[in-house]
Image 1 (cartoon, rainbow, N blue to C red):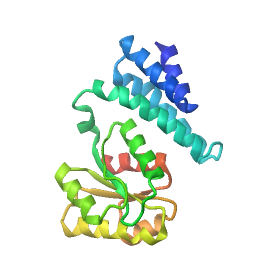
Image 2: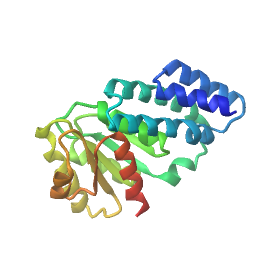
Image 3: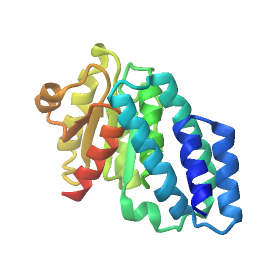
Image 4: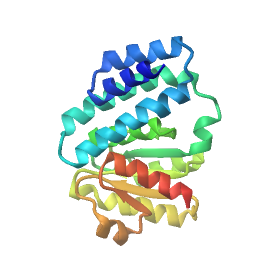
Length: 211
């Protein structure tokens, strides 16, 4: 069993999509539980990928291949998760800010959140502030995650925060992320947290829900 877990781990770290899928299927066929596969191989593999990326050892292309391997593995595991699993962790509505169509970072965060056990509702790109908030209300989401790559679209993040407050939704936390975002901007608009990168974003979401 340990060998197959290591195979999955290595395949994700190295961004080998087909090998990751094959190893996960073998693990399921051998009787391993989906949660065990996730916790013992996928999450730790992406933790290492995030660490290497943060230290400058690897770059976005390698991270994306690892994310694709992770997604392929998750697609096989999802039908096997217990129905209570996502409810226990939390629900996140995610999308890119109004006017922004750059979704690589957002997609990576969404995959990482799913890998960490969150239920993710991905609204895609160029999402109006009202779209985030209405979906969060509809889905009874715990967190709204807004991504932006362009400085010209950052103000829309502030509009999301303002709308959450206007609708009196204290239980809904707002996290922002993207290249132009920093702590000062997060504080300026009153967001609950910001993620430096995808892995940090997942950590911050966990922290928000543990308070």
